[in-house]
Length: 71
Image (cartoon, rainbow, N blue to C red; front, side):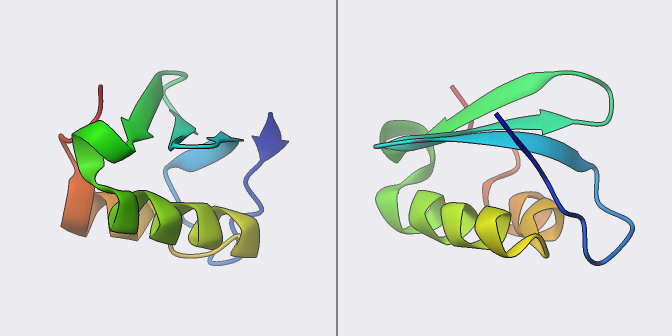
């Protein structure tokens, strides 16, 4: 598990785990969601991985592009 840096200061994301074909995301409410190639699409998941590593924009990206596309 990696702590999300939250460089923007207002993210709902607190942590993440990168998998080969998915990303697991923990939100402030303590819940974990898995966004996989199958549920959210490979391009979205790869973008989410990049944003997670950068520490900025992941929560917003999830809200705009993959909100309910978790497993």
